Length: 162
Image (cartoon, rainbow, N blue to C red):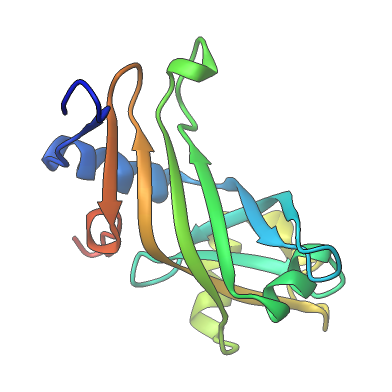
């Protein structure tokens, strides 16, 4: 970090924090590009990790963000610390720059999702719902006051077996 660049050198502590935020995420803010206006669209979504650690969303095809994903796969995902207390501006948060891809139907993925979110039983099998992989390209971690880091995909992703 220099006087002109507030970004610190990425270290193991930053990687571990980013990986924890992804591991514990249940909801996130998804940013897409509205295909009709070309402007950003932000929505709150349910999210979990896929078997390889990649963020995975279960989305309705009727939702504006699903239509946006089909038109432009570029997305942003904001994941906040789910256990932190106090001032939200001092809490850790991770902005992920990513590409979204429609995931093939998969019984194991479905079962894992329901294990972590049993209430999804109500809608998971509706014909308009699909899984989307949010594949990180890079990220920005704000770990608290004066603790900012640039990350690449490998810094953020940790497989469940690790």
